[in-house]
Image 1: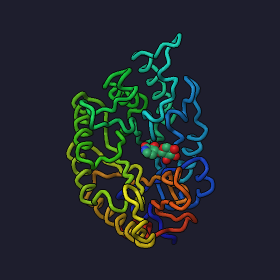
Image 2 (image 1 turned 60 degrees about the vertical axis):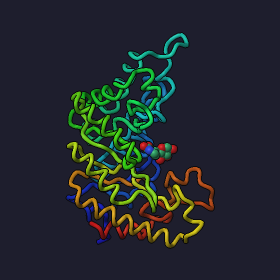
Image 3 (image 1 turned 30 degrees about the horizontal axis):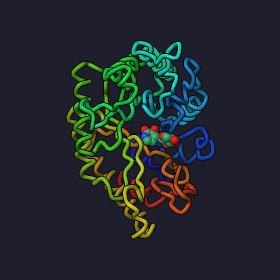
Length: 326
Ligand code: XIL
């Protein structure tokens, strides 16, 4: 039988990939063979599902849900609220006036009810809010339109609306750079507030857009422990490992060496996760290096290779390291 990551890790972790309506067709066999969980890379984001008020588009999301179900895969929902992906109509009121708090909350409620309700019992975990933390703000929350128009309790409302729409779905805060100390302290503070107010939050999604040199495996380990201590579930939600990020590594090292380092580090991370029953799923942000978002604006001589399969869909050293770590 063909080696399968999902099978190798079965019973310990869900092994997931971010997909879109195209690659479930062109790479459907590979995806279904290697992964037992999917998340929509873009298709379930607010601008995609409700581009105009009350006008819902679920064709792409439905195709992904249908693909997952026909292959017995779990489905993560990403995401119900994200400042970078909120359509402009959210902030427009009548007569050219800006929308007020009550109108925005009513719109948020309808958006969440409609989307979570549609996939009730099918999407098992939702990234309710995405990237809301800003450690430079006094209350640790990003100074975005949500905060400006509604106030800090927009987070509570988002979770409560999602819980009402599907009481069985697990509800997550999804965030990047959770290992950075000031950011982590802020995230902990925000989550503790939610828990104290009885807001139904179940877990933390750690995006993990990391590089071959940063952060250390120990820092990731300690981060997971910090949130497990609060009684929360952890998931790694958007894993990729850049060869370049934060450093032009390729200027003083060969691609071959960087890829070997990448494989070793992927193995170390996955072995560390064995000690974390609090981690229930690891999702890669893409399938092959040909499709990574990191190359969306990259010049052709600076292609990144952060994922487990190369541009031709062949397993890389990184794949074998993750496989062997199971
Ligand atoms: C990215 C997608 O990969 C891109 O295709 C899109 O252009 C922008 O969004 N953090 C997140 C993800 O939570 O939703 C982002 O996905 C990557 C960063």
